[in-house]
Amino acid sequence: MSKEAKVGIFVLLGIVVLTFFTFRVSKMGGITGKGYKLIVSFETAAGLDPKANVKMAGVPVGKVEAIELEGTRARLVLRIQEGVRIPIDSVVSIQTQGFLGEKYVEIYPGKDTSRNLPSGGRVTNTISPANLDEILRKVSTIAGDLKSFTNTLSETLGTEEGKKALSDIVQNIRETSEVLRTVVAGNEERLNRILANVDTLSADMQEISSANKEDLRVMIANLRSFSETLKNEAPGLARNLQEMSEQVSGVVGENRENIRESIANIKDASAKLDNTLDSAGKVLARIERGEGTLGKLVNDNTTIDSLNETLGGISRWVRKREELRTFLDYRLEYQTKPSEYKNYVNLRLQPSADKYYLLGIVDDPRGKFSSSETITTTEPGGTVKTKSESYSDDLTFTAMVAKRFSALTIRGGVMESTGGMGLDYSLMRDRLTIGVDAFDFSRDDNPHLKVFGNYDIVKNFFITGGVDDILNDEGDFRTFFLGFGIKFEDEDLKTLLGTIPISP
Image 1 (cartoon, one colour):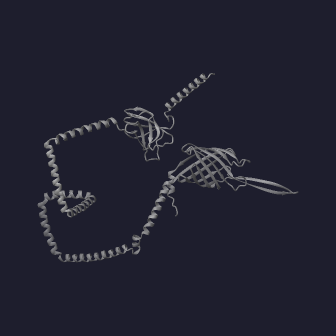
Image 2 (image 1 turned 90 degrees about the vertical axis):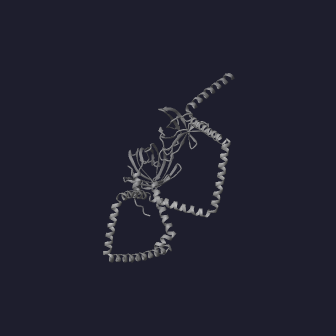
């Protein structure tokens, strides 16, 4: 084949590849087909082009996939990158890059980070974009009004009469300011006292009116009603007052001695009240000096510090209980040897994101394995070995503490009623977990080693599989298993645990 033919084929191949990628990139638009969709609508999307950027906090997170007409509004389909979570209370607006730059969609993230918009969800909080033409029209109107005002002002002050009037006004202002300066300089101290008194009176009146606003309204209404009543019944009231005065005079004349005794009793009560107030003053003085138990409680900062520390401890304890999360899970495994089912029920108490406590019950069809070997001596000089094996069919329990380091979780404690430990490694954003359990180190054969993998099909349902007792290949020890499980978070159980009293 000649060089010209080779060059031609190479150029043709390059053109085909370039054309393919050009159409592919044009069709994909960067992220089309990847990520998830969100729907948002505006009154207008003027100036916004398809494939425009979608930004959050100024960082591109997606593209505008389509702009459609929905009734009388513009409907935008946004394609958001995988891994970017948009809070459900976020606000979306159309912004402009610079003053006359290209338009893009800006997402202002909300505060409710516990709930995110799902794929295909609609954003309800929007800010309509500013219309540049309307802004320019308003600016033009303001400029016209300003020009008209300046023309009027020029016509008024541009004449000799206007100039003279303006000069007279300036001269009057100058003279007035001189007089005010002289008055203020001669009465500065007095004016300061007056202003201080006015401030105090204003503050007192404000405090009184704010605290007794409703009482003042009632009082004004009562005064108005009383004035009307007094106007209508003044003559009869005067007669009643005269009759009352005559009756009071007669009563006083008949009970003069009793009134004297009552006045004497009031004087005695007043003296006793003075003594009581004097004693109370002495007690308050002792408290202020820090004498006695109450005085130490009020004046000793140590007591206040101890109380603050106690309240702080209670606050931290309550916060820890609020942060505690409780999970329940059930797992069923079918074991090929001896063709039985193994059941797990676990309670996980998680006080923080990187630590949890695990309590569980295990129903193992094989139970706990135990074996013994007996050597019998026979005649003449022979021996017979007898080996017995048994399984205990009791339930076993698990109590472990787990700590997470990035994607690796280390567990340790009691595992199926024996000491043990485990390792879990999380992949695919915790949907896939690969782990190993090692326990029962005291048995005669190798320790019990289990290798497993869990995969979340949906949020609360997962499948599991692996090899159990992988180190022992004799008999029915080693077995493959496959199963499923369910897991969910239980807030009611958290509330129930919160009612259990905890000893200090």
